Image 1: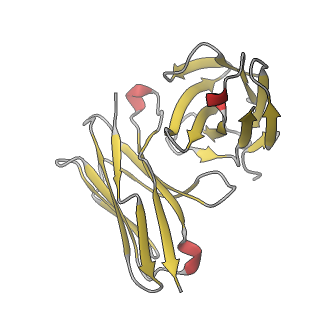
Image 2 (image 1 turned 90 degrees about the vertical axis):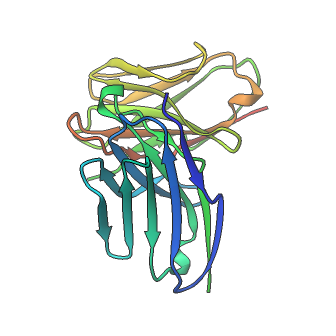
Amino acid sequence: GENVEQHPSTLSVQEGDSAVIKCTYSDSASNYFPWYKQELGKGPQLIIDIRSNVGEKKDQRIAVTLNKTAKHFSLHITETQPEDSAVYFCAASQKAAGNKLTFGGGTRVLVKP
Amino acid sequence: KAGVTQTPRYLIKTRGQQVTLSCSPISGHRSVSWYQQTPGQGLQFLFEYFSETQRNKGNFPGRFSGRQFSNSRSEMNVSTLELGDSALYLCASRTSEAETQYFGPGTRLLVL
C-alpha cells in the first residue's frame, strides 16, 4: 500500500520568515495530494490540494509543488504569522483505491513573534 | 453550509465496553470516511461508506465496524474496547465526484 513520509517533524520559524514542509510518497498511482492544518482540539482543515496533472498551485501565502518523477511534494508558507502555528499533515490518495487518504506523520510548526 | 458534525465530542469508557460514535456529513455529501488519530500511529483510515455501503476498509480488527443511513449520516462502533483504542476518531465527508474530504472536529475517546 501507499506510504507517505513527512519532514521535518517540528519546525520553528520567526514571524515573517518562510516555512517549507516536504513529503514523499511510494505509490506512483497516487494522483491527489491534499494538505491539512490541525489546530489544538480541532479536526484537520484542508488548506490546499494539488492533483497529479499540475506541478504547482498557489493560494495567497501558501503554495504546493509536486514532482511526480521523484514522488515528492512540498508545502511552502511565506510571510508566516503566529496564527500559522499548528500541525500540518500531507496526504496522498488515488481514485482507483477508493480515495482513502494516507497521511504523513505531521509537522508541528511554531511561528515565534 | 454547515460543516461535518460529530457527536459526542468526548467519551470515557472502560475496557470491555462498546461505544458508538456518530457523524453527520456536509449536506449533499454522500461519502463518509472514518479515521483514527493517535500520537503513535498518526492518522489511519478505518473505512468509507457511500450510499449505505462500505466501499473501502483499512487495516483494523473486526471490533471496528460502521454503517451509513439513507440520509448519509454514519455511525461507527467499537466493541470490546481496549486501552489502545483511546484516540481521536475523525469523520470526513465528500461528494461522490470529488476527492476532497472535509473533516469534522472528532470524538475523543478515552478507554480506562
